[in-house]
Amino acid sequence: MSGSNHLAPALHGLGRTHGRIGLLGGSFNPAHDGHLHISKEALKRLNLDAVWWLVSPQNPLKSSDGMAPFEARFRSAQKMAQHPRIHPSDLEVVLKTRYTADTIAKLRMRFPSVHFVWLMGADNMIQLPRWDRWEYIVESIPIAVFGRPTYSLKAMTGKVAYRYDRRRVPIEASKQLADLSPPAWVFLTIRLNPVSATELRVNGQAEKLLGGSEQ
Image (cartoon, rainbow, N blue to C red; front, side, top):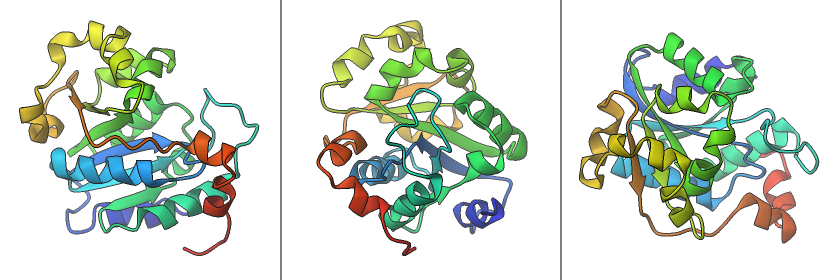
């Protein structure tokens, strides 16, 4: 797949030198309504122009066992997105990056005037200290954290929230997050969506979302 095919739509109408883009990374194994819900909330509450779904070739923290092929996961993201400003992307394949820190560094070099915001659920905020060069991530890009059932309290009392407590942005200023110099992060309480890719796989619903070739 060509990277230009997926970069162009997200910057359509904005040019290639500016814009406010949310980045939602993940395995998308499969993509589901929870991803769509977070993305729509991000567009609205963070005043973003677009959201890119960065479909990971292989998450370093996840086993390859039970991981569908990249092409199937990418197709599931395309079918689930169905929104003019939400764009599944194979950027990490194109950029040949495995770690989020490397992806962010290359995106900042390629699009120096684009205001990127990293989007994550509260569960990923808990795991963030396990990510490669996690402090670099926090100090390189504004982050929006979305509440998730059973994870929110632990996330807000965890290592990342404690270390960067003074850089937390009040909810009423969340629409300015993309314009702030990192570290800057906001915690957004949204309508809770309990759907997870793991649950879908356990319930046997993932195969339907990952199957087929319609785009």
